[in-house]
Image 1 (cartoon, one colour):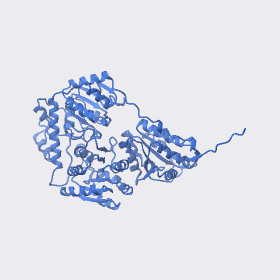
Image 2: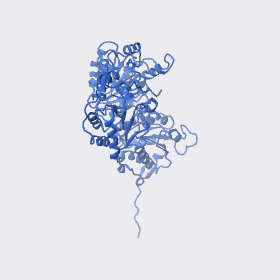
Image 3: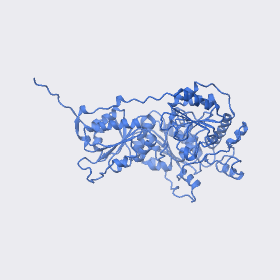
Length: 602
């Protein structure tokens, strides 16, 4: 009997790679082509109807934008050619690593016939990415290339980090058996979150109830627990504070939200943290904890986290609960009933009210030089309820932290832990690609914007209607403030010449405005909002170089500062009516412990 042979069907290895990406739900990726990655470009061209290639003007922008996983949870994908194309990705890859988001980087490599021959742009690339990546391999065979890509994606999700695959350019052009590739995307499952231990929750709850000066201090690990956080705060009369990245999980307008601590901070949070006797640390990895000795005055430190590696990491923990934040907070709420108001609660509410009145006095100014505060008020005026903000690094972080009015309906992203300048523009590109129907802002200082301004052209090229606001004061303000505090010189390397970003925008065919007066803001921002219904727009705001009030170096309390120092502080920061927390502690019958936490860091 003669067996009938079935004809073998082949597929290009590059096409199989792109189909693996599609199976995992990747619908766009970022990069710049080059000789060593052009075989992947062929595959992208063949699949152009299913996956969209976004041409950026610098690979770093592509890698930063690939961290759109910060917004969606889906893996971001970027690529660069061999040598400089790949190394340009590094800043964005480190940003993804530090913020624990899944990103896949495809790196071009000279063809296999020229590898290890010191050919053009050919080098051993694995060591370059060894530190940044959880998965870092060079493909060596066309038939196994799709499997390597699939493995890289699974590893990136599993470790919430970076995966890097170097691809010799000849491999994707080779035919492989079509039946030899597959994607494991259909098997992927989000790990089940651990249930809270009932006895640990009970002990933790009793400790909270016995506290005189408790605080709940949450991070982005509590992003799904905003309602529970607010309810627990109201029920037990415990003030809330957050890390800066967790801003917006509970609405900024909540009367007992103190803000964040340290330098990118709000005054009430720094003051309360120094006086708290019990801290409940929820989904939090506050990176200045040890160096600032933030919890040196805390009697009991309680922690909730889903990651066992985080428990006890930032401070000696008295009671630790390995579980999902939302489930654990709900379990605590089930054990308590509403308490009467306490002096600690009342003092903090009064302190927050006084602080917000100070912020409003800056925002509402109608005369004098234009400051960042009035510009951010104008942003708030035109912002839609579900607006997304991509925020660059520097004083814009500090000012946006204090003056943007966020709710849980908003999203905001920045470079949280790596703090790399230039992330505003790529983050806005990613936000608009993923959420085309939502209003998107890029808020950047002139230092950060000048690092990635070429990719304003990308917004225009792909018709991404972002509202770009560039705050210009011709300085790296955040770094200048550090030099004021720590250096002996008269500032070096922190001031620079003006760039007219409205002309830069005009040069890439983007409508733009340049403002330098408070009275210009309402009309300009309304025009920008209308333009951004259809196309990107830029507002170049020329502001003063005023230092924002240093919440980590307050000079307001007569028990700690001289009358002359207090008056000089209030004059400089326009803070005549601003009061220290000690005023309200005394008002409600509590002692001022006169504790302070250090600035920490640099």
